[in-house]
Amino acid sequence: MSSQPQMVPGCFMNMLIHAHEQQTAPQNVFVHEPHMSTQSEVVPDPDQSQQMTTTHDSNPEPKFIDPDVPFALEKLKKIPKEIQEIVDGLSVQIGTNHSIEISSPDGMYLEKVVESIPYSELLQVFLNDWLDISVLHWFAMYFFESPNSGCAFFNPHMIKEDACIKNRGGVIEHIQEVFSFHVDKTFYLAPYIASEHWSLIIICPATEMGYIIDSVRGKKESDYLLTSTINDAFDMPFNWEMVKCKHQKSGWECGFMVTKHMYEFVTSIQYDFHNNLWNTSGCLPQKQIDTFILELMPQCISKLFAGGI
Image (cartoon, rainbow, N blue to C red; front, side, top):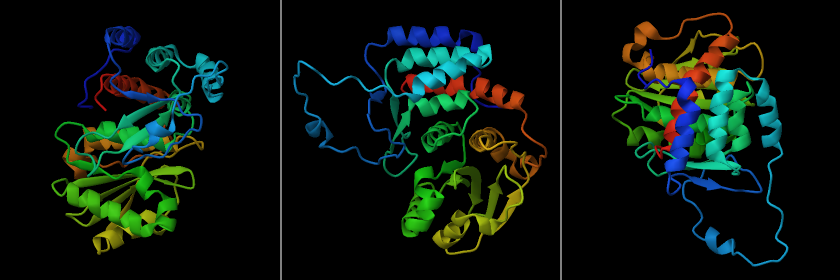
C-alpha cells in the first residue's frame, strides 16, 4: 500500500486548470531550447542571460516547435480515457513550452541539481515507450521526498554505464559524496542505464549487501559495471544478489519497471525489507502499468506545478 496521498483521476484535470488560473507567477521555470538536452546541470551558467541578448528585429525567427510533441499528442488520442484526462490537464500547464526545468529537492544532493525534461519525453510515460534519463531522475526526486524514508538516491546521470567507462573516478566521487551526505540513511538507490536498458541497483552499506533488480533475465553481477565501481567506492566487496522480479515482454518496459520498483521500495518494502523484497515471476501485465500511471502521475504532476520540486 502506498503512503502517498491518493488522487481522484476524475477530478484531476479540473484541479490543474483551477491551479493554473490561480497562479499569479510561475513557480517552476520553463525553458524553451531549440536544442534539447536531457543532461542535468549542477550550476546554471551565470553568463547565459548576457549571451541571449534580445535584438529587435522586424522579421523575428519563427518559434521553435518540437515535431515530436504533436506526433506524441496524436498517438495519445488512442490511450484509455482516464490517462487521456491526465495528459489533457498536463497540457494545460505546459502550454507552448517544450521543456520543463526542475530542481532537486533540498537535501537530496550536496549541491542543487537542475534537470531539464523535454515535454516530448515526458509524454512517453503515457505512450508505453522507452523513458528518458531526465524522466527517471524526476521520479527519483519525487520519491526522495517520501516521508520517514531511509533512502537516498544516486544521480542517474552520474552513474550511468557510459560514465563508468569514461569517468570511473567521477562516478566513485559521486557515490562517496552521496554516502557521506546521507550517512544516516539505510538504503541507497541507483537507477542505472546501460546500453539503453534500465535496471535498479540498491545497496545497504551497513550489511555490505547489494541488490540488482532487472527485468531482463539471465544476467549476473559482473554484467553491471556499476557494481564493481560501487565496490571500489566503498573499498570493500559487496555481497551482490540478483533479485527475482517480473520480466519485460518488449524493449520499452524497463524504465516503467524501474520506476515501479523505486516506488514500491520507498513506500513499503524498505520498512520490512527481508519479508517484502520482490520474489515474483511472469511478465508485468499492461493493465498493471496503466494502473500504476493512474496512481503515480497525478501525484507527481500536482507536486511539480505546486512548486514542490
